[in-house]
Amino acid sequence: MTNSSSALGAYYRRLRARLGAPKAITATAHKIARIFYHMWKNHTPYQDLGADYYEKRYKERVIMNMKKKAKQIGYIINLTPLAENPVS
Image (cartoon, rainbow, N blue to C red):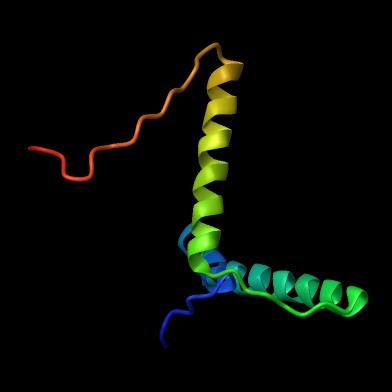
């Protein structure tokens, strides 16, 4: 089976790595049910933004949570991008 390049596929893969396949399948099915209900209730079509969009948002959330935790204990995190071709 090939990996889906949808946001739901990326969501499932991330959960499967952390929680295991059975819980990831259940959580993804629940997410699909919530999406379906929202679409049905509001009469809107489903628009998948893709796995890249999901991964980008996930990274932003992780960074924001790290900054919040550091601030709670009295530190500030400043991020600087790495050079594209780092010299070893």
